[in-house]
Image 1 (cartoon, protein in one colour):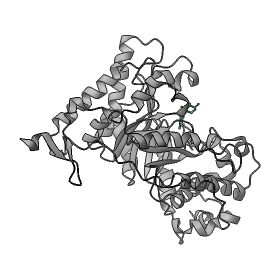
Image 2 (cartoon, helix red, strand yellow):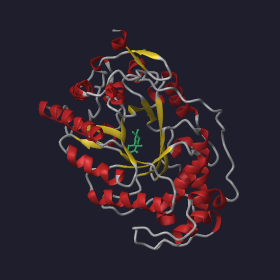
Image 3 (cartoon, helix red, strand yellow):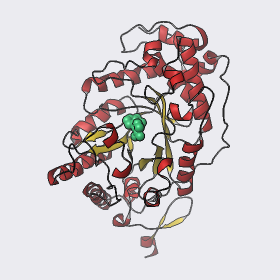
Image 4 (cartoon, rainbow, N blue to C red):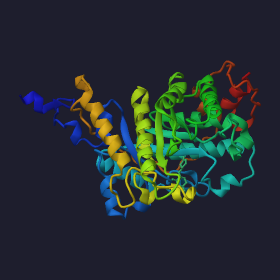
Length: 416
Ligand code: XIL
């Protein structure tokens, strides 16, 4: 019957049915009810045609995130000097392929330009620089990023705050300030807190819960929690533990995502048992995301060992990706794909089958370039903060700020 061959893909358009075992990873994730399966890529690999031909396959990857080029030191290397060329090229490729775009990252202690890292700051001057950075960068990509990692890695593994220039100068206030500026700059983007080891360090996860509550208590939008998921073979949490960690945040109303997945072998070359362990660990993450309805997707931190960050950052570790350095699909890839095929094949409802697996590219607004910092940040941020005093479970008095950003600081200053 015709209806068995053609399915409606919405808007009256008929699409060719695709059977699960013909689907790529992204298609399978969409068929299983997720938004995407994606990967970090970067423009310095764009001259590698074998790399690009895999990355460009939107059936495999429905989401790109620039691995480095949106980080502060690259996108605003010196004051008021914005470099959008590289991330724009990643975005252009995503749009050409019909892929979504995830954006990374705004307020982060690492890969900072020296003018921020080594500047002499007061609360007000650093607040102004953070707001200007977020406003300029997010305005350039307004309407184009599914999500932004607004604050990245604010915590130590023991749950204390990292000793960054932001925390030293402003205490925890840089966090709600960043989210408030982000919400103002692009109300359509999903705003994430992103960190690593939340899945393995309970005190760090508890502190991340308090960060979310701090932002929510000030009535500032926060939509998502990104688990970086930089795992090690054999040391990856099991499925139920990964589910429990996600639920800490979905219970607060957030969506969650595994935002930078890789699973490194502890010694190289890996032996057979480590290869099997890598498959199991990748599968645990996939199963944990499938089990949590508010887990929207998984992003690989590069898909090939050829360009993985692991060996240079963690000498002795490596081969952490789903594709080998010469682009063959590794056993972990096959394990994930076969599992996803079985999941999608077993879905009894029509929703699991023959879905439209393409994502319409967003409309590209004209890049707006650089903006000047609004004179009155407080007034501009006011819509995102509550005026009456609010309580938070942070349990600490946050000191009252003065100057430009009173809209946030006054509210935080009244926290008990
Ligand atoms: C890494 C990149 O992969 C490397 O190329 C770069 O040299 C350092 O940063 N957490 C993050 C990512 O949020 O941005 C980091 O990416 C990996 C850890």
